Length: 533
Ligand code: NG1
Ligand code: ZN
Image (cartoon, rainbow, N blue to C red; front, side, top):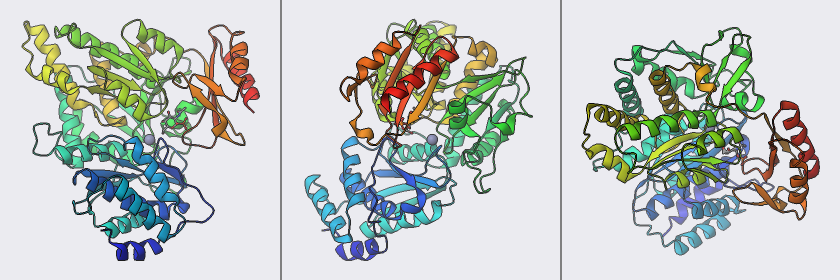
């Protein structure tokens, strides 16, 4: 039976604003933080039900709006293996969030319990965390009321990054099993990553210090801790660490700023020397973009596509080196936003799949390879080793010392990489390992291939839901006739490519275009935008 009395009493403290509609999208619920009180309460209850449904396994709840402006906030659920919430439950989340009254909410809960066959006598366990947003504490209090209302045993992981929360979920659920992921604490995470990194770079020449733009967000705290664990193995110089300065979060800094504006954060202009490498985290430290200035002071960005190219080629080399080239297939997963030049570079070397935007699509497609490398151009990504591959790496008998070394590196990579979700800090260490092995500076890395100039624009339209896509979002099937017009335009540009899709996180339609020159890419993007509007 649902604890109706507690639910009613607490739900009445968190009424749903009458005029708002909430949607659990690709990144959970995300909107203005000041409107999310009822959403948080209801997500607290839903997390409890999700845990009960999964026999008391621990569910994660992360309160963050990532790279969005400071007044925004958001919340998403993490399933027991550290992955995004199962898709069918996204619908339940939306239904519960939009019930107009307490009674309607309780009715929707009863329906869910019945339809999903949830045994309410099971225990409910949740671990939750938040980023540094000022709206966070009040929203977490509403979430905790939700836990209380349904009787969740909840563990507060306080202020930490999204990837640490995902790590905790997996670590808690695998504790004491043969698949134990690591100690279930932030320290356990730091220890796991840093010790794998130190083993990988042992005996190598330490690289020059790395400048890290922390977006004035929670990544600043995590990077500072990680830096202590790394000691001399990698020196980090942290910038944009003002987590308590109002308005500073993601403002003219961070991975999204760098990727979108294709510029160095103004706060680093006087700091970054030519040739020196730097990277930006986003507001919850699950995206990573590198960059450097060349001798002429020109800005060069190394985005998620460049990271995928660097990392995938390195892993392929190690797999071959370990004598497992025939047995282990390495593949890459991208979205339509991947630069055409990166797709070409990668496809010449290994299998590449294109999927729809959204981490869950990338993650699931990557799981189909023995080793699946997935990165969004915006810097969100990771590498997945299938359970069979991990097993093989741990048990394979190498026949030469060189094979043994390569095998050891692969095993250490399985520990260095946060396989639950894209993780800026883990990815940063991964990139640093490859740069050390290849003796690459940013310049050599950058020259793996040359990005096609591209432009991404947002178009505000009356109703973005009329835009429907196919072929991994590369083509429109609605509104009728529009795709043909786009095709006609694209044909006029050398290496032209353009596509239109509705955003899953903002009320806009996105237009992407690339061509051989900056002017052509801009021109194509604006002409396509003109068709959409
Ligand atoms: P939408 O708003 O659906 O384009 C954006 C990003 C995605 C992904 C999600 C989740 C672009 C073009 N889109 O999705 O890659 O990161 O947010 O945060 O960067
Ligand atoms: Zn993020």
